[in-house]
Image (tube, rainbow, N blue to C red; front, side, top):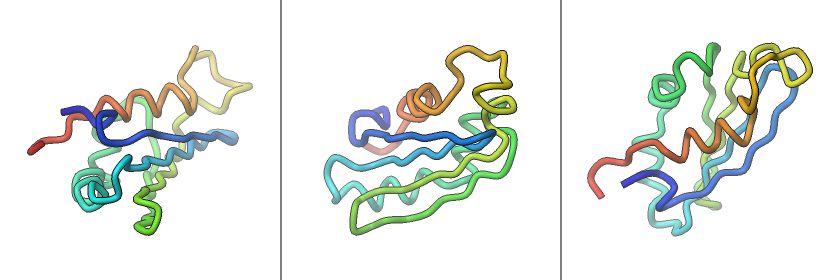
Amino acid sequence: MRLHQIAHCRTGDKGNISNISVIAYDSTDFPLLADILTPDHIKHCLQGIANGAVERYELPQLGALNFVLHNALGGGVTRSLALDAHGKCLASAMLDIEIPGR
């Protein structure tokens, strides 16, 4: 199963930092998301894109995780030569992460 089957994302970016929230459709899936979507796992899944630290903030009352990806936008929207490598595209890549055990 892919992440997009149990969650959706919202994104934002500023400078060279991408901010991606993963929100469970059903709050009962939040513990599964919290177990699997560790900062190390996100960094591994987005290797070559998220080149800096990955921070995770938990919002269990919303069934959501918020990830801050540093050095993830090739210098920022106005400096990068990469096409479509910004917040919404990173969220799409994140939603394609395999969720085992479902």
